[in-house]
Length: 218
Image (cartoon, rainbow, N blue to C red; front, side, top):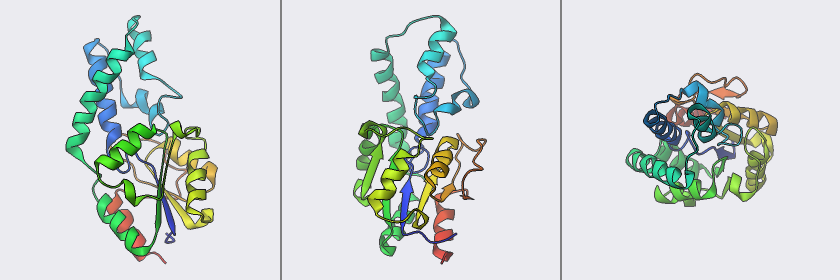
């Protein structure tokens, strides 16, 4: 692995284990209605939000009922945010961010989630100021696998594509990185470990492993 001058992080499932908490919030809602939702069924949402497949619409089709999502969504989000508040950052995240700061490596975030969600958690976890730019779908960018988010982050870093590295966990994210023409390392989690991550340039098992690889890279 070549040592990059800039790193573009996905947010959900890379810096924080949000994807599991979000999925579990849907599992609980489906169970309340006597339904099930598997990771495989839910997987089109990973890295892309609900633009390609919507679990709310799917639940309505399964039950034949209409739900008041102005009530259901805040209640579901309150449960998942309480879960996330206890979990914190992914293992190795702070060590990696600290090392990058010491090496002068520029950092950005590019996420298919909303700015309220991403910036809110980055601020809550005390790392928002580590990044020179944060790019989200509600800033007007198309969601992954479209490359727009990653290209905006790369332009913010003001570096050639080959001097950047994307850190992703999802199939949609790795396709987006390939479409952007930027090297990508896939670090799967318990939601994405069975996904097709073959488009990534590299594959590692943790942010800690990425840090060790970067330290030994030229």
